[in-house]
Image (cartoon, rainbow, N blue to C red; front, top):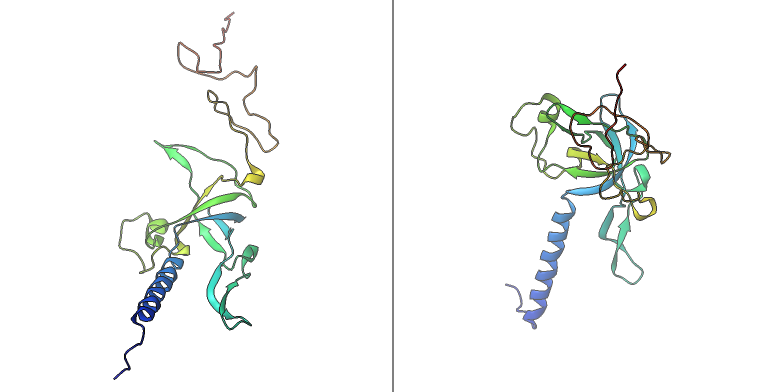
Length: 199
């Protein structure tokens, strides 16, 4: 038999703290979205990425005060505590057989999305099949969306009536005086129709 507690409230508080810690542990194992950096562009059309956050282990380091503190991990690429994410597929804006493709370079920032389930079978074969494993929200099932910037590297906002294509030097691909083949009786916003004389 156990001795009855003198203060039932202590037991409730301890249980609440235990459940809260367990919920934090479970949540810490789920990956949904992280910011990353491209560390390699692979010949098979995928990229290798590093995570831009340092992993923190809660309550694992004894402190001089007798309490337990946190440990910041600094292993792996960018000292993030996360391993390198390899063979990450890259999102490409596409549809109807057409696509817009940008050159991707080492150092580009990206948004890493993590599939709910193991996506290996679909990614490798294109087949609809049961997941290859029981992993969920795992860092091995990342997809990279390249093109996110922090406040230190913001891009200027384009005018509301113009779609701009700009190279890494800041030069626009389309500048005044350029001609473009177009089918239509009225010019799109920001453009003028060009009269072509036939001889």
